[in-house]
Structure formats: C-alpha cells, structure tokens
Length: 399
Image (tube, rainbow, N blue to C red; front, side, top):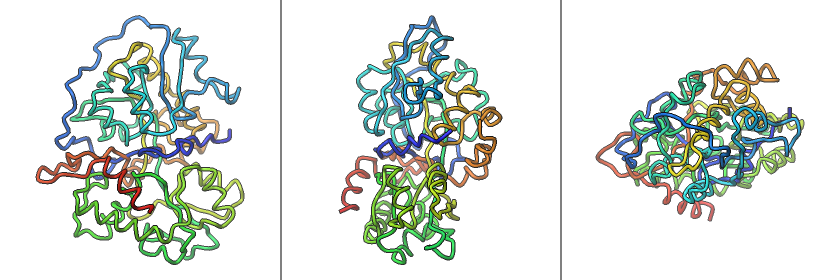
C-alpha cells in the first residue's frame, strides 16, 4: 500500500506537523508538568448510550472512509459496529486544530504535541479515563503519561502513533556519511544553498537539541524548555543556518522532488519520506544522529464541550485497536501505538522499519511538546519562552 504521507500535508504547523514535542529531556521520562497548572476538569467515570454520531478533527490520513481510496476504509466498520456516524474535518495545521476545538463543535481531535498542551491549558480538552478505553492496555509504555499527553500523571488523551525527525542526505554528494546534526548547522556551509529544514516554529527545538549536546555550558535539559538565554542561542544558530538553506519544506512532495533533482542534499526528514524518496530512485539514506532527534507523537483528545462523548470514546478505542491501528500506521507512515498492531501490518517489516517496539530508539527522540512559560524541565527559578514567542522568532529567522 502506498504511503499517504499526510503528516506533510499538515502544512506545517503551528508546531506541529510536525508539530509536535518532547518529554522531560527524553521520551523515556514521565510527565513532570513543571508547575503547569491546567483547569480542574474531571475525566468521565462511565459511558452511556451512543449518541449516534461523532465529530472529529484529524490530520489527513487518520479518518479514512474509502472516499479517498476504496481500499482504505476503517470508518465504515466503526459506524456499523457502534452506530456512531463519523463526520471529520481535515486540519492543515496544529493552530487550526486549536482554533476549531475552541468552537465546541467537535468531540475529539488527533492533536500533535505542539497543540496538546495548549488545549489542556485552555480547558478545551478534558482528562481521559483510560479504563473506558479497553485497548489502551496494549499501547506501548513509552507513549503513556508523557509531557505532551498528560499533566501530573493525569492522561489527557490516547496515543495514536509516533515518528522521529531524521537527518536525510544524498549519498553521492555528502561524504563521509553524516552522524551528527552538525551537517546542517556548524558544517552546513559545505553544502551552501542545498541544505533543507522543516518549516515550522517547532524546528527551533532542533537547534536547541544540537546545542544541548554541542554547548553543554548553556545548560539545556529539554529542547522545549528554553529560558531567554538558551532560546536566543538557538535562534542565533538558526539565523546562521539560514544563509545555507536552499528551501524550508512543509510539503513532502517538494522535499522528495528537491532530493531527486539535487537541489537539496542534506536536511531534516521523516522515515516515510525517506522510503518514498528511495522508491523514486534518489540516492538517499537517513540516520538518527548521535545527538538524538526531535519527533512527533499524536494523541486523540476529547473536547471538554463534547456533545457526543460516548461515541468519541468508542472512536478512540477503535482507532487504537490492533487491526485498525496497523492500517492507519501503514497508510500514514508511522509507528503504531498498539503493540499488537505489528503482527497485523501488510508489510511484515513495517514495525522494524519504523522502530515501533524499539524503546531504546525512542529514548533518543525528544517528542514535540508545546513550549510554555512554566519550564517543562522542572526549573522553578526560571521562566521559559512560550510558544507565541517561538512563532515570532521563526519569522525573524527566515528573514
């Protein structure tokens, strides 16, 4: 089955399509909210009768009913089995998702990490009772109760899948093979005009991650928790990088085309894009650099104003059920959230390719998390730069 590559269609986002994240320094760390204090909302204690419909906001490729491809449909069976008719709106960015959730017209959203904390802080998303989602027990432990989907150990959503932001390079033009993000930062001038980077404010975290390892004196512990000095250092690094950038990408087709033509030879990418670019016979490989990487993990969240919460819960359980989660992960191009899904993918090597069960791999990935003023690394004596300032800085970086 060809990959849909919708993450790229997300049009960048607000932070998210990439959108998304990081736990306290690594994906292996539990949420420590760092002083983050959301509204006092309670999770539902029981479910009632199905309301007969559910309204969803999702990334392209997450709610497929056969209308885009007759062979790709996991909505119809859900409707037959639950009696919940699905209406969905495809969002182009995390910012759009946040705005739509504020209207109260939608029951659930597949939020990326750059949106999830905003929804929690504003009271637009409510805590989730995972006991009412039977398949939650089979979700990989590395996705449960993390900084981008929980606060103070209270879950605010159901993990959908995950992916890493990799370093892709042209094997004929970039030698020796890079093993560090220095290839797009300190050594980027070697490929001036042919370096590419993800076009989103959340990319500032990639620079912060590199500085976390290359300039430990800055004291960065979490690339999404940056005080002003740390933030300024990351922004300065990206301004320097800008002189070597050929283009910033948010459309996966443009990145594939640029690597095929040779207009780009090194830069950030996703595994699914690497696969597609190799399928187009471009001489590329990708690596998870020695510093680690940023990454994304999407979470199904329930609106605090949901008019159809029972159907929303049924949808969340359905989308992470083994067979369906396998279908979505394969179509979209990501690692599934449900551990049992790996035995059910059409391509038997899918979970190996996407490192689905390799928790050692994911511990090197710092998942997108919305930057907030209360430092997510637990510091009480500092104020961190919130996401709105990341958006402003990104405009300046690109000049």
